[in-house]
Length: 128
Image 1 (cartoon, rainbow, N blue to C red):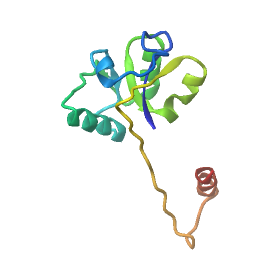
Image 2: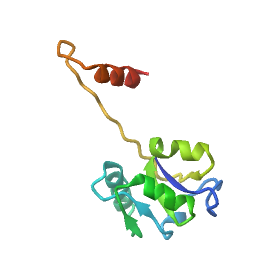
Image 3: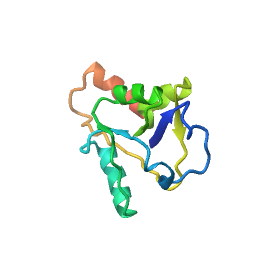
Image 4: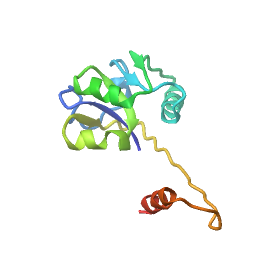
């Protein structure tokens, strides 16, 4: 899943049943427009005739997370990228009810072709 996140100290942290309109006017730190999950968000916004004007677009998710920790705004990032920071209480997952986006990947390989040890390990981890 791709989720909305903010500082654990944000006024939105712990709030239940939010909708997109509740957060659209907040400062956003987003990945660049070509990121697939950013494109998915922009498409959802376009369907609702809404738009976001981020204060910063950057490919460095670690920088975005640092800005969130300092309570400088909100973001929309893959859960995988923020899971550890959420568990540690540094940032908060925002429950925005009217946006639900997930990204999927498929991995193909030929069973009769050579696989390195690294490829084998990746396949094993992906299968879990």
